[in-house]
Image (cartoon, rainbow, N blue to C red):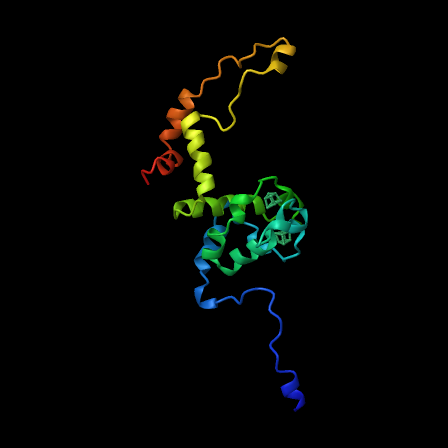
Length: 180
Ligand code: SF4
Ligand code: SF4
């Protein structure tokens, strides 16, 4: 066996190869042209955002990888990723980015684009439905702690009716109502 044949095994691949024919430069330019995307191209892939993120260790695509994927134009992969919806919006990544990349806000933009294309996870639609139905995500109940503080047990003036009416007229309301 020659030396060349002994080294014939392919190298271990840590990530899926990227099919460059499927990259969409318009996606990168679209994000970059938004107010939050001004510094996107300044990202030098230092991974500080990922190091700062409290939940990235459970994500398939880490924050710095998502930013790189946006820069590469991996529209489908980014917009269909569950990570953009799992983001806690704690802004730790954005606060620590040495290049002022607005990581969290860019993920917001990605969510908006994904929603435009109907790619909203069922769990998020369920939450939005809860909001449009009840007018609040967390029902404020009578609380013994309020009584202990000499407050009325019920929060006074709490009305969700107007909010529900407004919300139903928004696009969120139309999406969860099945009108879009
Ligand atoms: S911290 Fe900023 S510069 Fe570093 S990888 Fe994340 S987005 Fe890029
Ligand atoms: S804002 Fe989202 S991506 Fe950034 S650190 Fe928090 S959870 Fe992670």
